[in-house]
Length: 91
Image (cartoon, rainbow, N blue to C red; front, top):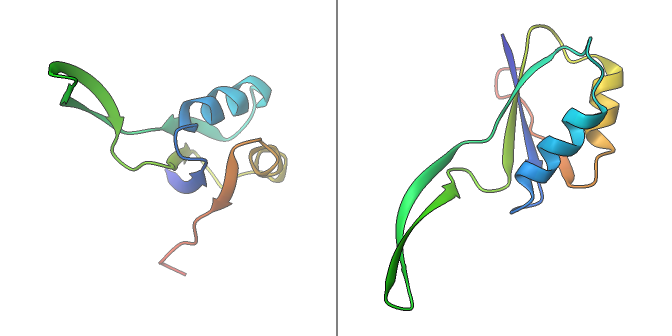
């Protein structure tokens, strides 16, 4: 598996995922979008609530079975909430 890290508009991670999934072709190499969240106990106005908050706000990870094809890469780059692909620290 190959993983890509993308930086997206903070707070719009799920909208980014939904938008890309809607336009991504079936034969795309993208297997899965990973948006990690954790459940926090938050007190607001004296009331305790459980909320799902992003573990890495503004970042979405892509899992692919092979190198990301040019069409998928272009589609991701052109999506509304996309900022950039993070560089690999191995090359």
